[in-house]
Image (cartoon, rainbow, N blue to C red; front, top):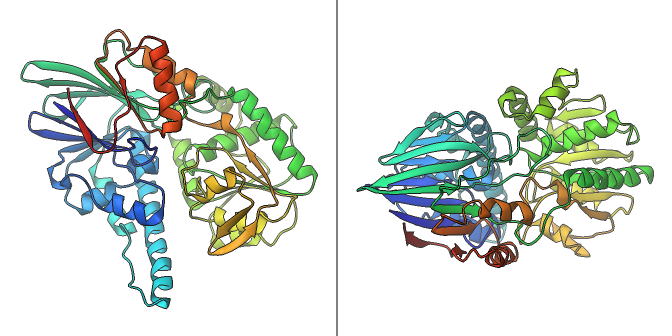
Length: 464
């Protein structure tokens, strides 16, 4: 048995890990690497293995850094099944199609500027048509139901509490009488977040734990504390007549923000201003959220059954058309705009930021982790000047970062998660984390007498 780390190793994005046994090759996740554009294209286009040799993929959840390179995998010859939960199947289909559309538009824009400079045009990583090839291979499985994605592998999905349909993956491996229990955390959620159930912790019989470490450097404020902080930032912005622009991931974060705003208005916590969700993908994702009540926690179900449509309220408008989106930037009145993408690298939110960032009345609210070299990271780092579409803008708007809204576990939860297996596990591998997150978490484990923790580098392997 062999485990190889081909993505999200000593970085956060591009989740992809390869399990080999009994002559089979099983891929855990197939995500897009996100960072500098040229580097990203190179890494995403070139797999460190032949996609034709992969027998199956087991997908933890639909976020693009976990699912977004599936079209390219198929384009290069993969033809096996992609196992995931039912909600993940629905979300993955719309997300990779949207990603394909974005890839085409970015290639079109780059080619236009290249040709003006006498440089060659570029091809997209994959197209929307390529992305449509993912859906026929998706094989939905219920939480808690055993399935066999490869010879000698018995798998079960457990609720990860991160986004709708997210799962940790329990793999019972058997090869030539040799047995191991590998647990892949996917992205670990948090307790008491709106909409979703709490994450399931790994069993104490786990031999190999492969777990995320994004926020291994610090605990998060509690969800209620973050809710109050978000409300106060919005309130003071609206009272000075400004707009609140929130770059948000279309799946998961947008729905949580809408839930929180619904609650704020229910509690008379905000001035009466319009709220817009401006992202066709977020609108489609919200439709899928409504469809999958099996993923909701008790509080969400009670809220709905008491007559509250959780993702609707009177001030809220979902925007699909580009014309309606553009019109928001011509309006001077206070409003709240939630728009994709979450790292402000593409999509409509970039235009909203461009028109809002130089007005000190406005606020750009950062509500999630931002990858290095993205516009979102530069804003979160409070750079005085930022470049958008090749032009430089002075950052005069208020910048608010609300860390407690993260759907990722903080250091305290990650430590609890890993300590569950301390007495049995031969290896604990920290992935999906930069040095900033993983190394402090590793030190915390060692303070708790856990020495078998490792921080593997990209494209390394270990025999199990």
